[in-house]
Length: 134
Image (cartoon, rainbow, N blue to C red; front, top):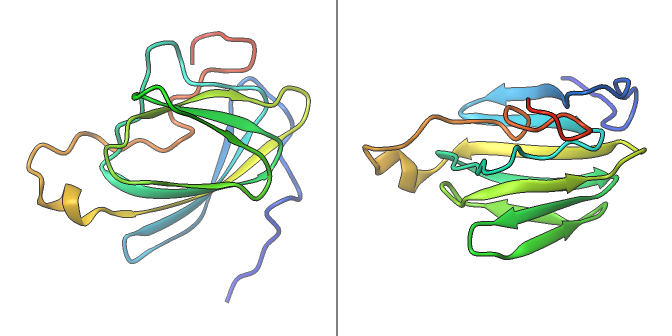
């Protein structure tokens, strides 16, 4: 058995997001992601082969989808992202940590597809705070 606290200790603010894999078992991966004003690079869209469930625990964020929709996240708001749901992190809060809990699992649809692309975690392609390239 393991226990932990998702909100403390938090890593210090830096130019990059902090990613901690809390659990990886049976095809399921649970990550804590801490953002400090980072966003996705211009023109970048996540197109993951895995299904993802994400809930915001602190701070705020805006997700944009390739159909133009935006979802504003505040603590307690969650999003279910099926595999290949193209999305990007438009913004995260400046000055306060934005803490995400992300759960990934194999998509039954993507598993059947022969052309599934490379998998990327939410933090793998996030632009550093201040808008520079990752």
